Image (cartoon, rainbow over the protein chains, first blue to last red):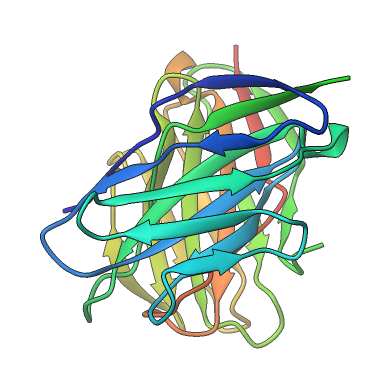
Length: 115
Length: 113
């Protein structure tokens, strides 16, 4: 079984400032890692994912996350946030093994960008 | 737009009642997942179907059931509703069961009064 811990439930940050949303996971097997974003009154959208290969993955809107196996972390970063980044961000993990299908989500981090 | 549709968008009902939530996956996706999002429990996986067959079960109550039809749409049935069942219910789809990306629908907000 896997678990995900998002250490901050809310993160306020000023516009154009950098931000880091923290995610740690626990698993006894290899995992795939995901960040999803949920804008107000909307469903979840995939932001980025780590499956294999380069441990640094990027999204099209400037976010990046780095898989750190030794620290079992997958923190999400953006060097300069915009008002439009205000949303809730969910880290999720899925076993890379056969026979495992569901995503296990963290509790979410609400990012509030202050003008 | 993820291509996953869910109806209805909102549902208000009373305790003890039964409701059905509907999900149409993305074109070509064979696998459907149901999740419940509540303030206290967060996002919880309920159940998964692949091409009409149940593939995995999560924290789904016995009062809840689901099925996937030959046209691949899925329904989640919630019965004997309790106040604590009030939540957002999301459907997601993916091409195959063991796959990397799940695409989420907009959700159905269920309010039990």
